[in-house]
Image (cartoon, rainbow, N blue to C red):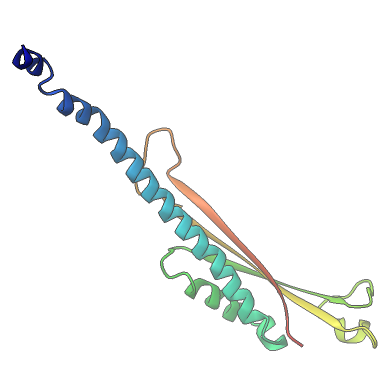
Length: 151
């Protein structure tokens, strides 16, 4: 009788395995893809911070747009096609209206101080490694960093 019951259950584990393996495989691939996209997003954000850190060293580096863009793009070598956009803004600590970086030296008078900031926006498009029909084939990642220029 015991032998008869065992024959009915022969292969049951194999059938269960056949159902479970594809589900676990999809979960594993999805987790790896999510981790890869998260890593790329961190790289893009860190690249913006690296560009802003370079530009915030002093007034000369704050106006070196090419150097800031180079610092940002070289900080993310594992992310292809990264671009950086730089914006400089100036204001006066006493709230004087109409201050730009070009006229800050004449418009912002003592006791006011010139407050110069560098903003770096980074963008990169990352293609997904495992595409499922009906889902996105690529994601556009953005990074933003603002830093005040040392005086």
